[in-house]
Length: 91
Image (cartoon, rainbow, N blue to C red):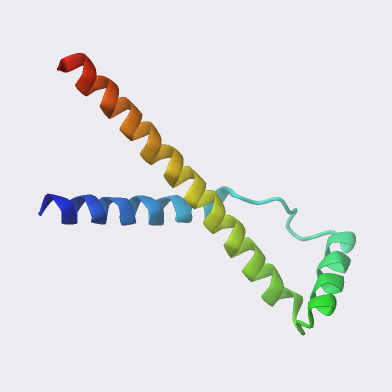
């Protein structure tokens, strides 16, 4: 049962980090400038994608997944490090 709880906690942690990254990871002004819109149009034309918003969505979801994964790995490693130090001190 503890293993299931740990796995559910890890899934919930990753999902929470993903939601936080969706909320706070932005590099664009809203609305975008003309030069940014031109860059998205050129990239979508080069890749053969009709609508640049489709490309935009895929790129940002990928970036947000990477940010969430990096934060998840950092938190898990930090947790293991701190847990190891406390068990070493207590033992």
